[in-house]
Length: 377
Image (cartoon, rainbow, N blue to C red; front, side):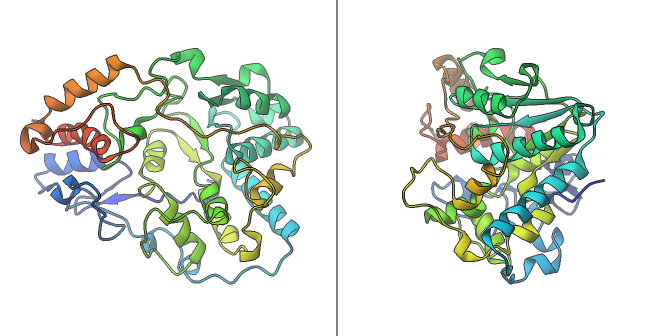
């Protein structure tokens, strides 16, 4: 059912495939397969040789060629189209994708920030509500986090959602340990502990359709800012698709984890139809206005946000802060786990806790949990 969603990371081995590396690794151990940790990952600053490589030598990421059509992987011819027509084509593609994956009778939760990618998606859903009615929408809930709550609430009001259709994680979790980091729960690869971030566990389960605006800005906004790519892998001949991947933190492993833990993951900026249109964007459209603040989006996303009959463009935006209010008690719990873990017992690598952002120590701590899950008796 619905238009296909492209999941950047799908793990495979001789045993089979999985969206979660921990599940595949544990199944391999149980089935008697060799599973070897690649110890090069212990070195700070290590960069993998190719994008299919993982921290286990016998598990790889499924190549892009096995997930997308050959026509999308080829060098793309830019569309011969005006800027306004291109924006409308993008919006129509997102709308059709959401509509085709919608199920009125199933619970739907959107992970919302105060950012522009989220505004575009919730705005389009609001348009569908006006066109098709509340009954067609069914159960929908929008969830945000701090420190973006005030801005998010204003977005919801202007899009005319009822108060019972949106909420802040702070009201459920509180301010302390706001993102629920430090859980003894594995992330989906050799990733920072930040990838544990949680502001939705109370309302999302296996029967939920999850909606997210991930990897929207990376396609247009990052190059418009002249932002340097995080990696430099050659994924395909499609220039913008290749650029998108090199702007992804890691290789999209957390997206795959989300998809594995819900009924369906609606990710409009990763829909195959959206990528077919977006990666044919004329280069001259990818730009920013010189007279606006950095918090303002690129011209394409600004035009998408302005396309609604409600004004959600002038609501201020702040950067995400996934470290918000992690407590000393939690840091101490994390330290206790690490220094009593199988991973530390084997490698004896000391780390500094609290971490500085998503540094190497953070990744070692998070991997110690994955290591324990996989290799424990």
